[in-house]
Length: 226
Image (tube, rainbow, N blue to C red; front, side, top):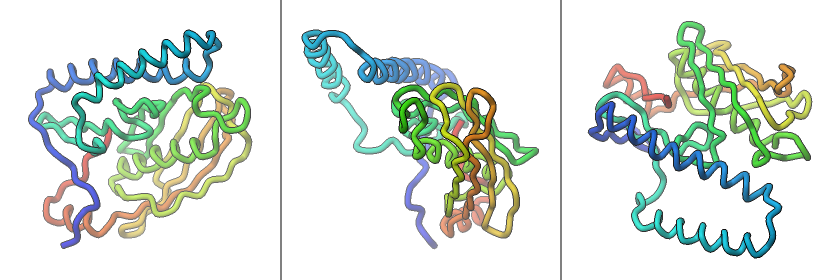
C-alpha cells in the first residue's frame, strides 16, 4: 500500500474547546496581520522603529518558549472540525494568509470567496502579485474539486492574466468542468473590485494513489478545510 506524503492527525476536542481556540489564536493572528501591514507602511521615526523592534523581539521570545516541532499540518478534532491552521491561504493561525473564507457548493461542484488583498500582496505598483493570484486560485480550485466529490492534488494550473488586479477587494470562483476517472478539470476566475475578470484559469486535479487506496478501504473522503 502506498503511504501518504503527509498525515491527518486527530485530537480529542469538544465544540466549546474548538471555539475558544479559534477566538484566542484567531485574535493573535489578526493582530499580527495588522502588525505586518503596519511594519510595511509605517513612517514613524527611526528611534521608535528601534524600540518597537526590541519589543517585538521580546514578544517573539515569549511565544517561542513553547512551540510544536515543525509545521502545523492538518488536525481533525473528534467533534468533526478541521484545523488546517498553517495553510498559506486559509490558515487561521498563519499571518501570511489573507485569509480567505471559501464557500463550497456541493450541488454545483463549485467554490467561491470574497477577500481583501492589502499592500503586503503587491507585485507591480498598486497591483496584486501574479504569484499571489495563482496561490489564491489554486486553493479555491482545490476546494471546488472537493465540493464536486472529486478531491485531488494539483497536477497543473494554467493561468491567463487578462489585466492587472488592483490591490483591495477581490473575488474568486471555480467550478468542476469535467471528470475522467481520477482526474478532475476545474475552471474559474479572479475578479477585482470593479467586477472585471482579471485572471482566468484552468486546473487539473488528480487523486493520488495513496488517497485512492485509503478511500477504497474506508469509503470516506479526505477532510476539507472549514
